[in-house]
Length: 545
Image (cartoon, rainbow, N blue to C red; front, top):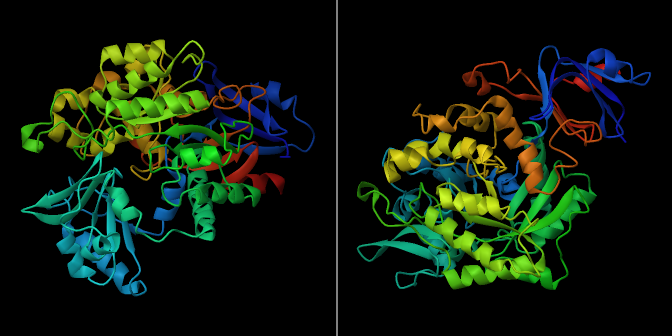
């Protein structure tokens, strides 16, 4: 059990309803007292470890309500192609070529995070281009959204894909002039992924720990894996259980099983896994099904088409209505929370209608807290129905920062500006759980906070300024709303007496600085249940000295 800790010397954000306090006492892993320094210090036991905030701020630790922790950890050892570093095709090829030179002969070379909209060529790389730098290694690079990727010829050969391979349901294999380009979209990606060697359990446990330590250094005490089973099947469940048993799980985890037919939800159910929130460190809470793709990749499903200048079309549904509604009804009746991916308004409609149909007198929707993940482009009627049925939006405001200008290019300014309506959701009584979808976007919480306060893209375009939040509201969305979406708002998400002592001490008082200063803010100390899982400057070591 953690030793008592007294935080003072800076503001402490209790939560949106509680406002600020001057001191916080932690004992037995929970908030023992919070208030003025005199009040709280008077309750502290002798020998309490004191941490001087020095004008910094303490907040409830961040909750990463929608990310892919294992893939993020595995990606830390893959070729980094993210747009912050990679702006040209030549740089993509240079990095892949360098990795291929170092890789054992015939082994796969994997890259993650390129954005064709940010590349100088304004398109996806091709198999032929990847072949030039890696003719003897299978190569697969994934676009930042995770909904499409490019394979080279060796990878396609390993997957048994040829020019006559048909498009699978809910997916597409790009061909130009009858020739494969190497681009695989949505459910077609499985053709390549299933041909890759599966990571070992040791590798996965190491990746879980590495990702968790990275998140702890950013102020997260809770995280999620939103598609468990899509990398290594049921073995991923064992890897997480082993990470917990060995003390290598850094965050409290909300686990979401892959529920597409190619996922593991059915097999896990048959092996006895049931919805289980009893262990706050490893809760098996939900099932995920994909409704559509991404707006940046032109595969999110919309009623109105993309701009003709961007390519037109209305996107891709991963499943026909009948299949989607059958899956949602099945998982609803099994007792799972439904955490369903839908970005475009047509996909949101398909998913929302399926959730509404799944409700029945003997299996009502009330209290189930089903979620629509991303929920980026929706209309007022859809918001009304979600609110009436207690269905939660789980958005990624940082998408506006990283991809907002591409939304304008693909959809036009009016539709782009209305995306991810954070203020509207709060004012209407929704509980939008802000998150990053990492490794799709950066897991850094301060970029997400910046976006919620400014609605600025990384090029400075302001999209829908009427949807900006205050810093207090933004932190509320990143803490309490995430806890609410995981049935945990009675245990975490605020710093009130009796709550779990999940605390982040930030390098700056984010409630008193300009939004631009958020982008250079860091987490200095992260506590999970009063235990330090990250201590940048050794504050607790110094307090114990």
